Image 1 (tube, rainbow, N blue to C red):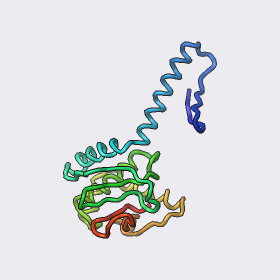
Image 2: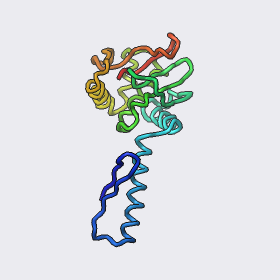
Image 3: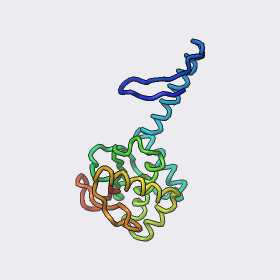
Image 4: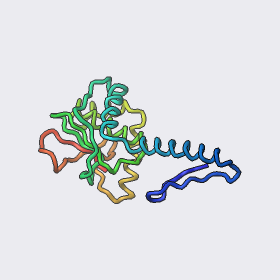
Length: 178
């Protein structure tokens, strides 16, 4: 039994031996599971903010408290950005649909900038509290390479990170490259 999207339609595949009642029950169950999976992979701004607070609590001792966390569609060369002065975090809509641990990494990265604006050792120590940081950074590097996106080299071991955001004033701005 499985289900997948084909454009605006959902295709559900079931064994032919099921009764009509079993078929309807399984279709309902499968559609609920599909909707939940899609909801997890496409969180709302409110979901992002709640997730950021939980990640701060778990990995940064609750010290990074964002004023807002939201999706933006105008970040073509970055995965995320942060303005420490006002506590705002923005994530590129290109992250939607990526594994949650990758989105979590970008959130932790940006949360760390609320505590340490630059990319020094203290910053990377904070980011390193997220257990899948290296894996997520590698995932994003692979996505960027496949899409022929620029990769800046100022991460802890030359990983991609850094840069400025044209939409923000020069002071206190940051983005994760991608």
